[in-house]
Picture (cartoon, rainbow, N blue to C red):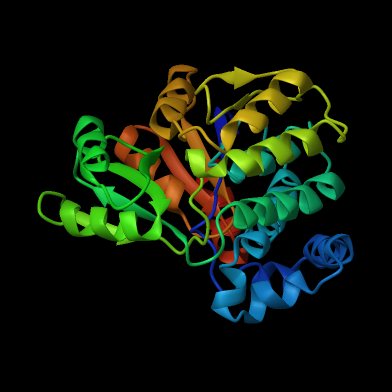
Length: 310
């Protein structure tokens, strides 16, 4: 296999009830990591992933470890097939999964860390008080003007996912107003199943506390570079990774720029690890020449490995 492979790791919004279940019943490493996740969190995150209810899975403090665990399970099973990885990136929460993949952060540290991250985010803006929505079909400048027009509360661009898709986040009343306003000019507006308005100034209290926590954790230099959300450029050293995570919560996710950086490194194949294939879809919009695959269950794993061999 001579593919130049980038790994992509999903963030919040990709979760669904039942994720990881197929691997659990077919791969010993999946059972091992789910059970380890339960122990690390002192709760049955496995049952929340498999059985929900959806409201529990969508709570930020549950969503974050649930997606990280299922993403790392997909990674471990995939990597066992001898694929060489050149670079990785993760969308928001997914950056933690990417750092686990690059061996900068251990699974045992990452699971409780992202659970805490979710809790800090939820404490900063209680459930029901914040919201996020994806706007399809408006340019960066148009979205910024739209946000500036809203007087009902704070709303900001949070994720620059592609030239066609920008996510806004903020206080719920302000987001509701922005959704109504955007419907006049955007192709589509999609409220997201996220209970905290990430990547806005509303996350300042969470960022302060998370930065303190990051300093207590052992980070290592990376086995391969991870392109960070906050700078859209690669990090190689432990301290660079910690700095990027510390700044990430209040800064927008520069995903389109990050993917363009990866493409310019000569990458020809992107493989999404974890639930759904949101990032694969975005990559196809950003560069149609990149081959995109995803791994979230036995069927998608087999299909991806077969395509790579061909």
